[in-house]
Image (cartoon, rainbow, N blue to C red; front, side, top):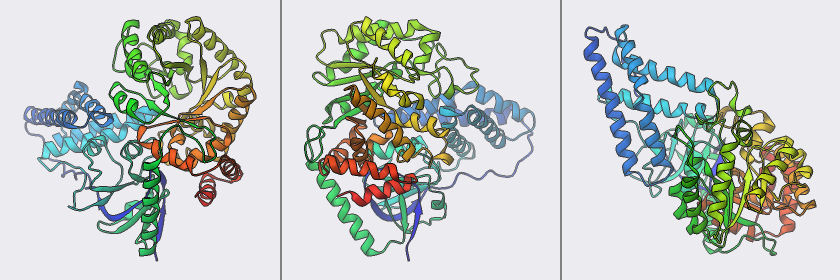
Length: 549
């Protein structure tokens, strides 16, 4: 009898194969006396230097993209002089190098967890750095992905960037992690590679190497029957065939349009995004120009970057989100370092109150880049809460000659007053990740609360429906640019709720396009109603899956 382990489904499709578990972290030896603190401190520093060199080498060899960026960021973390100094001080207090290094990393980790938000999510990165540094110090093999010599399903407590940078999708059939949520590194990687994945699956900790599993629909079926494997393979073949055959603008089987757009958040993503079969950019995250700097980019710097995007999407829509600093994206020249709860603090549009020049410079650069461009440039503000904020932002955008100004709906207050926002804005874009976080009072980076952050939650769908209804009443376009847009089944629900555009990673477009094309608009509406009537996310998902072709 097979056993079904529940988790959170990310990525696409299904796969079956034998389990290959990640190796456990290195075991620390028993503490030893320190007889030569200078020599031990030197050994500790050599281990950190070797760690930095290894990470930089991996980043250089990794394919250009998110994995390489995160590896470089990890190398910067490991090269922080404070790390070596504090570990060296621990050695001089009597701790041997291994335990001094481990304790220092654990201290940094505790501070990140206490900071919450984006910082808490980086705690896993520090765990990986600690383990690799200890391996360098003890001259042990580095932890990493398993390689049993045949296709396999990777099962891990969690996956670190250094592990995922060289993941081979020709060998790895699917990913399963004990921890993690819908915005974890594993989830992002699975979607980028088109791999089936289940995260936040505590029971996966008991899986054994070689054990046969079937990964599908947010579950891990242990020792599945041959019939279950055959049926899943047949569904997967049909899914791939539909996705490969679908092209052109997004629309339902009876021709109801649902524009399919891409998310864009870094310069290296531009070629792939522009080449995708998409109708434009639904979310252009401009923060990449501001990160890792001590002062904001100049107007000229921004103009060049924006013009490159607009030219690449000539004839297509580009929705520019103005600077969304704060919370998980702190910037020294924008946000206060001592905010007690930055996720509920001065972030997004609120930073324009503190420093209006930042927004004015950005709008001037967007306007200059749009001048003469054939792209259809729209501009929207993040973290809008009140109608007055939306009205002031829209007036500001239009004062720079930019004709289309919108608001992101990420705060329940904005969804509940969407009818008033629609009177002063030209469009809405719903960010389901933050909207879920604020609706359920659940930190979006906290894996333990992943169930509350499930975009299938009926209460979240109610807020989407409220926003879409208000947008329709005033003939305002409304789109979704959060993780929900990339889920093919949820895309049907969103279309049925009245959402007119979906923005996602380029790899997710074919599956969403094919799923929309296989269902009528009336079917989408029926699924939306069924999902909203459900008592919880799991039931909503099951009700829609039952109705899908």
